[in-house]
Image (tube, rainbow, N blue to C red; front, side):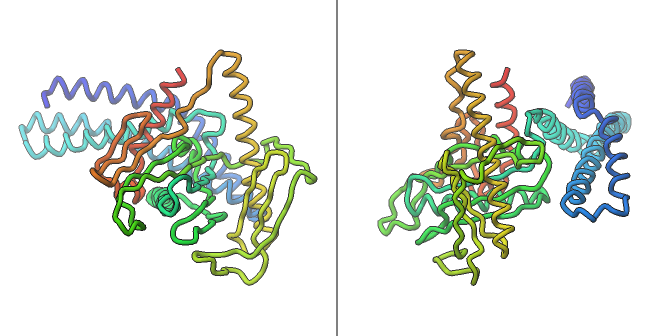
Length: 368
């Protein structure tokens, strides 16, 4: 790479970094950290474990955010020095090292820039993920389970906590549906671009004649509700059923009727939770999921009214959004962004950051 090209590239990256720092508002983040550190040091912190968990989690996230931005700025500053050394000493090894670091810094900047695009009302929230098997029979149920694993593996790769609220297993293989939470700041904003119908094309392992099968699974992403959210739920509108939780193949995993299913009669929304031993805990978790679904329904109704006022038919991008093709060729392609990967197994193993980044950038373009 020519010296002039490198100089221009470094100027461009420095400008991007300055913009990112401005959007992140590092001074405000440092002030917020100081307040949270004071709260975390209070002797009474763990008197309320739930509040304590939120404070420590928020503090850890903000500290990591500031450290990441500061480290990236330092790497960018050092990069200029590294290229100067390579030029002065005419050293191919140093030049190769500098160019490799330039590639890494460029990638890290792109990732951080995507984070600054998450400015929606609920983008900072944790995410509730609901996956359900759709058309395709046993293949669809198997695909739904693969998607569950994909998102859980993605969260694991990033060190994000998860908690499965409920999984309804299919009779032959796979799952009918599952609901779980991803416990990380900005999980909702990041994963919300995954909402829609996912399509799998492959030679079915469940077909004796080895025919190609197309199956579908639906993904719904909701923001976790907080106390500030106003969702009116009348007790008289709820039907609560308790039952014994079951695992794969219908086997009982609990000896008591602790699993809870709540039906919101006016809307027909049904939610279940079976992950806790206690019926009371399962009911509380199920109510959280129901509140999230009603909040999203409320938001969609408000959005539909605004679209009607603007003469906009609404966006349908969230319907069929990604194809996973395993036969006759290997490819995963996002139908909105055109982003594609030729290694479906890596995607199903949780390597979906490229799709998430492309989706977030695409969504931002649609909002302009």
